[in-house]
Length: 70
Image 1 (cartoon, one colour):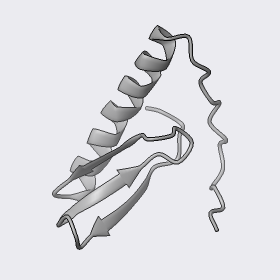
Image 2 (spheres, one colour):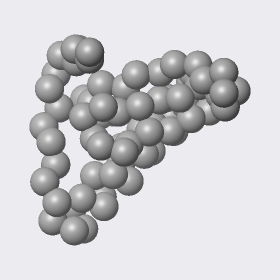
Image 3 (cartoon, helix red, strand yellow):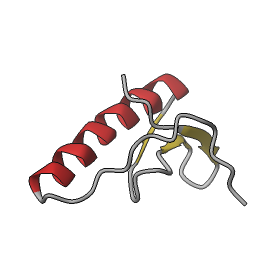
Image 4 (cartoon, one colour):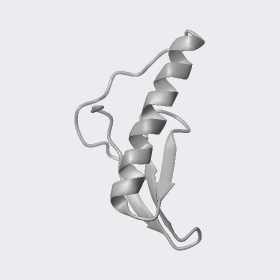
């Protein structure tokens, strides 16, 4: 289990639940249910982290609290 915040919302345009990981730029997933979107997001996080490690890119530490978006 990862400690990054995952925001899940319904997209009328796409007809799916979208799961975004704001602390990891470009990391998002989707699915027909919230549970599937969450599971896909966890896979996306793992892939994001693996890719960052492969290219020696910095990996942000999870903030550990709810992000405030404006």
